Image (tube, rainbow, N blue to C red; front, side, top):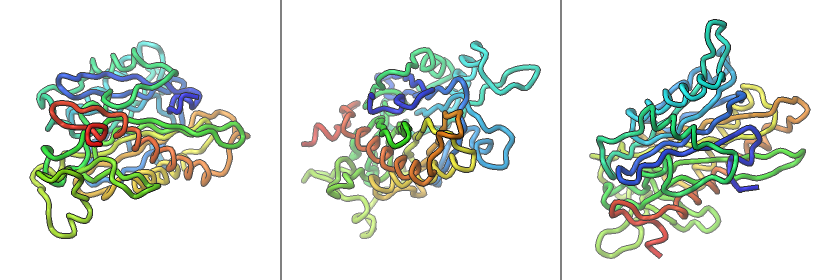
Length: 322
């Protein structure tokens, strides 16, 4: 196992990374189709094709998830993924054409690098071309390229973050994985110790300001407070219904709550997609188990997103602050 979401059978991951502009996108391909679910908890989301992933809607299988920088402009990257899949004959059979179902979510990374350069359709296409079922690059790659955390005092005092992934094998030969681009307003903490790993840096004296405690005292800058959002995917190779996979997406948000403080604010667009690639009903354990493990691997992936990141555009990463 690679300790990555690609440990889940049927998934591939590819990145498009622009280090000069500090932006990029990440594509999670499930070309044969996977049962999809989604849960949006942040109050400022930028998303595509989330409605059809909820119960009571016709289409139940998706063919790709795109996580991207560039704010709402970055949603264009999903069009590139659609083109890639259509060229290869994947998609929902609408009789006259196969329509690839590609969901997407964006994060705001325009305050770092070059604000007028964003992932476009070609970026999404190239990310698909790079996709593989092998090890997944982490840190300053794909959707995590321009990510940062701890925006209480504005982007100048944030800490560079990135993209992380993790997985766990559980009973009945089932695997659960997660991938996440962490661009949170709040701080990232290690849930085992409660210590801040990355977040708002204190001017002059150094160290971390502790965003939540500082907010209680009325401290903070809100002019650019919308420049956030944590977006990710959890997946399993178990067979789950549409209702069950949506429950997994909901439970996976607990992984964000374990590691990001505060989370799901009015300034974040936190969105988690969930995928179930299993085709056999006999490979279907209690959804509560999968949901609980999904939260655990999501928490691990969040920590990896900040510990694997490197400083960029003058913004230090956690490894630079030790």
